Length: 350
Ligand code: NAI
Image 1 (spheres, rainbow, N blue to C red):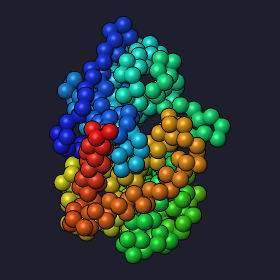
Image 2: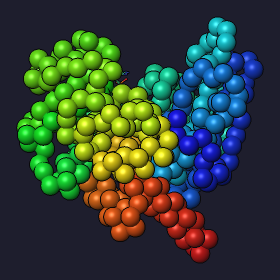
Image 3: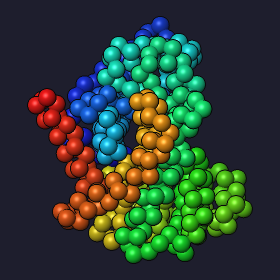
Image 4: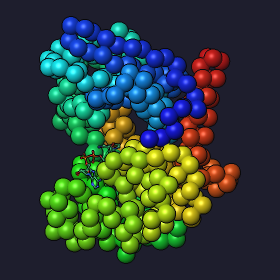
């Protein structure tokens, strides 16, 4: 988990409930200063309401920072729905959620997240137009965001490697997780001449990467410590903590997973060990750019241009980090907060 106490409290917290369908959850608008608070809907089992609330608040803050640094005209938010204990009608529950989103009049823009799907968002669309992540129409953005996310991560990795004085060709990248994003990333890296070490709890996926890209397979428990120049976490969050950071052999961490650092202190530890960390939400914004494009009516070409711009945005964070002797994750947070605060001031003046 990231720091559970957000440095900045959310603008609005809206509990949502519909006893008829079993809907129980919360919508958190961390910030609407830059635009509607955009962020997906998580459908998850929580031990307590407090745990559900803490998760939503933390995720909403992360979305606000990600959207601000992606230079999107969007604030940040998140919704969380608690998995009902007993049987429930998914259609009715998603419809009730859609009505809750609609009631906010466009202040919140939802999409899929862990536990929700394109099919769920299509149901939500029946109640509100403030939803993205639907099937892509011909030539339009939308649909599976993973190729976009992978492309942004690849370009960011290229930039970060150059900062360390090397091209990706000939470097070894340890990729953890070969799902939607990891598999696309492996293809790009292979084409760029990088060598791959891979791990996935699904052995078939690892074997496919070995076949297609000549990747060396290691056990999931060994990927962090694998002999590699770059570590690309593309599975779960919280993978770098005080126990795993000392095992890392790579000099650069750049991957798609959200909340790579178990806690901000772990990013400080990386910096002290001389490992360059490309902050997760700076490099993995390709997916939200695709979602934004779908909602804002941008063309696929405009969305692609913004994804291709990921290295420039990462460079701004790394420059700020260098100029202020800050670890990159703290520089990213600072830059995001500055952008959000500036938008608030500009709005007041207008
Ligand atoms: P996915 O579910 O398609 O792939 C995850 C892969 O990791 C699966 O193949 C799974 O078997 C593997 N895995 C799970 N635990 C593992 C472990 N302990 N060791 C090795 N492999 C393990 O997910 P997807 O869409 O590829 O996303 C990957 C990460 O990137 C997630 O953390 C996600 O939140 C994040 N992300 C994804 C975006 C997208 O566009 N799909 C956008 C931004 C972030």
